[in-house]
Length: 348
Image 1 (cartoon, rainbow, N blue to C red):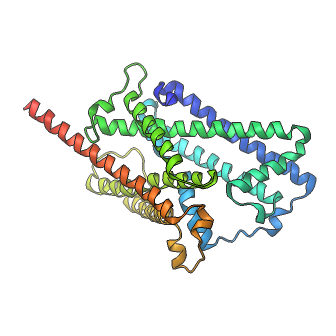
Image 2: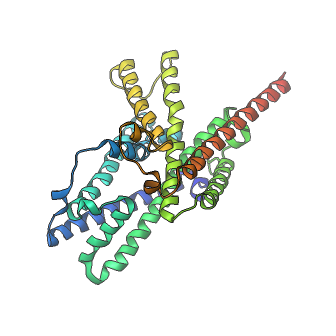
Image 3: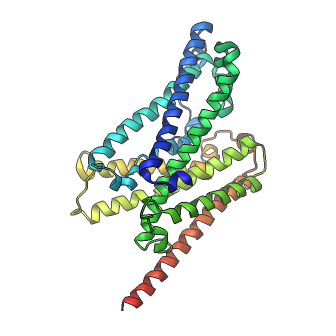
């Protein structure tokens, strides 16, 4: 909340520091894995199967989309840039390249030194980290702790970055009279940030965290998986409305100047939009109702074994969260319309 409240000129350095720490920690692991392989041999890749499976595809689509959506978010701070038409596309290219490297290189290094059968999600990754850090001898323990702290800091600042961007979007919607009160859209005259929206979103996030800890029963890994899935679905579901809105605006308002262009004009734009929307549909369904598509394809899927909780618990929490968000959205629209009606009467 603090990083979102402070001015963007200062807060951006906190999130930038987190990004640098994340890249540094992943680079440290990758280099260490190479050193471990040079000492003990590169054996993992010989038994690894890189052929994608239907089950793996359906399981990973939501997480992959969650990892890569949001690159358009810096547009929310376009007024802070000297030349957003030049800077935003360049930033997209750089950040996408760095993100792909941060995912691919550590995974390749991990598979090169750890048998594929032992690589199982987060637990397998941390076991891989513990294994390769053995090359440092007595310093392995402190270095492992330092790496964990670096990851925690990186995750914290990533959450801050999302909060900064999403709060500004919500504040602008409120200022335009489209969501709750225009008072939520007020930007602090000195800080230049929507402090009221920052505090409100922080309170909601805290309430959600406490609810998740109380309502989802199971071990820590199971709770984390369910909460992560809720975060994934709420983000992906928003794009089910965003993408069609972009298409409608593009077709109905062709006279509006578009600072960002897609190759091949409207046809290129529609092709991109349809492709993205297909991915979002698959990812949203797989995240909300895991196992359904797998059963249609004849793939064995034991829900309790995969998630560590029953389907009833999972769907109650995920769908319940969606219902709560829809109710909040409906309330926000209602309040905004009433406020707009009252303002119109006063002016009249």
